Amino acid sequence: MNHIPVLLKESVNSLNIKNNGIYIDATYGCGGHTKLILSKLGKYGKIYAIDCDIQTILKYKILDNRIIYINDNFSNFKTILNNKIGKIDGILFDLGISSFQLNNSKRGFSYMFNGPLDMRMNQKKGITAYNLLKNINEKKLSDILRIYGEEKYHKKIAYNIKKNISNNKLHNTKDLSYSICSSITKSNKFKHPAKRSFQAIRIFLNREIEELKKALNFSLKLLKKHGIISIISFHSIEDRIIKCFMKKYSSLNKQNIYNKLPLTEKEINNFYYKNNKRKLKIINRIFPSKKEIYQNPRSRSAILRVAQKI
Image (tube, rainbow, N blue to C red):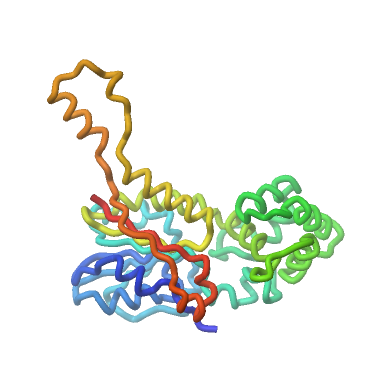
């Protein structure tokens, strides 16, 4: 199955591509967004294409001297792009996992294919999902499923996973899926019973929430004035983080000036200037069309949020 980028045109159009601008595709994946950005860029434009998974970069590499490939986590913006502070015209994040990764049974991301319990985005770093499940205690596992998967049956699933590992009955994604499915008494007919738990384990294992928070905070320094940040999320936790980030930096600081009175008129104006200086302007929130959801069901949960540095 070929990877179909979700909200492709909407996310790239939201960047308002400048002819010779500098852009970051923070989640290169299969290169769909980068390819469309390139089609709008001039001869001297640049794209920094970042992905922690070297396999996707190698498989979907585009030969174009306007692209600079970086095999790293986007949370390392400060290290890998420190010399570009205040120079970036737009940053694009697509936080979904690619079909290339999901359909590769050896990666262990999918409950649909049997394979080793790996789930690492970067297979050169960190522990595998199997080692995580083997060594973590039941209470902590239950918390992971509840927090990152919002799984109703988190306690029972955690109990069965640990029991099956102890009894040497859990070795691969098929075994994990069975442990999860056998723990759920009532499931959503539109979602596989193992979806939430697989997602939760992957998010925790790859520290995806922490990585996102770190990247968002530094992205403001990278963007030049009027630069755009465009983010596609597929998970309610991720979307809440993005929403809070954009609201935090687009809202006025409501410090109580009354505690500082009496002040002169000039002092009052200076106070509001210093304490109410916003960094972002929220531009848009976009959902997939019915047509896109029909053509690409995985887009159903996607939300695109766009903001501009001011």
